[in-house]
Length: 288
Image (cartoon, rainbow, N blue to C red; front, side, top):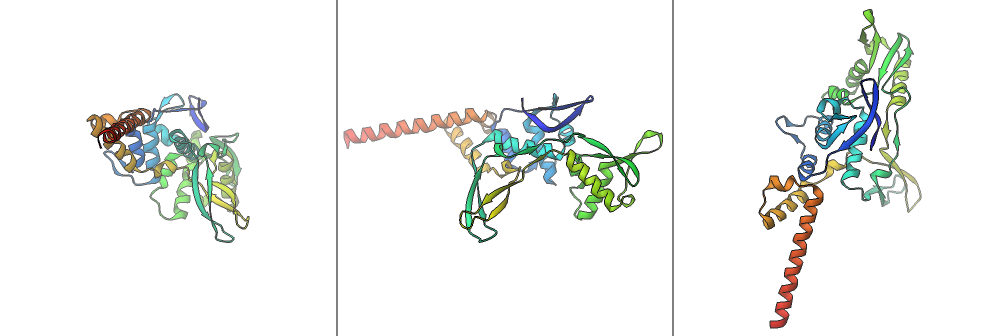
């Protein structure tokens, strides 16, 4: 069973198991189209990730993959799942074209998403009590909920202030947790909080190293965990069109097919066309 690098706390137990649904044309369509049904255009990248994962995951930590559960995942887990989705769909080599930072020569690099390294969650995940100038505070790893909370804040400093109030708590009266305001923290406090959050958080590689074949300079190339968002709907709908023309099925019926079965039908269509072309050539050869 596949496991998250972080996981969810379920009834006091850290659960890391997850499972994807069988891939269908309908799920592929969701990846290609950025709109959320009945909610209009997706207002943020984080919202799109939530929408896709809640549709494509069958379960997380033994629970149904509801939007609430998906939003509760750490940012690192959400990125990991999006990368694993790319692996699940197609783990063939991906090619990147880069321009050398030293000599500007262009060169190609290939990699597989499944081969990129993953850093598991740290010892104190998902929250850690540390000492700052205020006293003891609880630092939590950022989640999808936190991403959504700051998604519409344009100013970076304001977004970071909002994030601190969400991720850092301290025990107040009656042992209830209270938000810590950024103004209450020193520069050293914030550095300590950031270090704690980074130590706890699971991470995936978003860069790879490649040497220029011309001057041998080392280059750092960005690798997005959201490669499956770059899929085009054109290929999918061309396949739907081919099957509909041949079998006279509805779009809904075709999109509901598992992707492997859809590909099998397309192979049968191509095979049938090949046989028809062969018969036509044979007929022409005998009577031409």
